[in-house]
Image 1 (cartoon, helix red, strand yellow):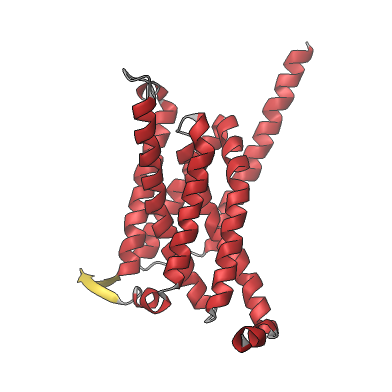
Image 2 (spheres, helix red, strand yellow):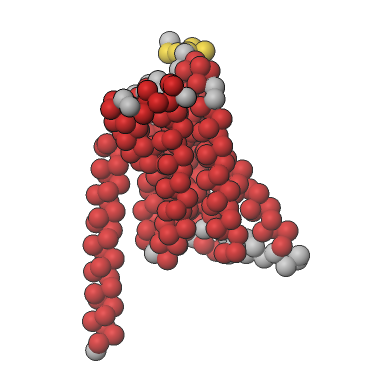
Length: 253
């Protein structure tokens, strides 16, 4: 208790907490976009539940990893060497996550461009119940895989910013709470705007390439990534306003 009291009275601890919360929320955007796109493939009655389960798993993973901070730090130590370059467990996790994101986003783009291949996804001889259940389990499994990748990245970032575990725990809980509150509105917005779906899939490809670059030891400043995402979102917002304006003019004729 004395330790927590001293921590609460330390202005630098509050500054670290505020900075880390912002960082964790920003890092959570990647995870949230993936969860939104993936759960929108489920039957409508299962989507909100899948999002809550996926985000809850993200919280459990992050808090679990915080309990093994000493082990997490060791993930940055090289364990194998290929072509003269050392790779740590963190590098390999980021590489695997990046490749998975590239595969998933490319596959979803193909289905979006040519939806005829997936239009019977939830239909079948059993009336769709069994297939829908399998799809829900598959969605949770894929969310869990990406939760692991983003959780490792999130915790290593937190460890690099502060040595106080209570600050990390508070930042993670706040960030995941924000994800939980934003999940349904973001998913509905993406689902109701087809062009946003393609833009979000493009974001996932960019995030996947960033993870691969990080896995090979090339640091890509997150500010560049999110600046590109914000710029693209603003342009798409202007496009949406222009389309609605044209539709109103046509309706007024």
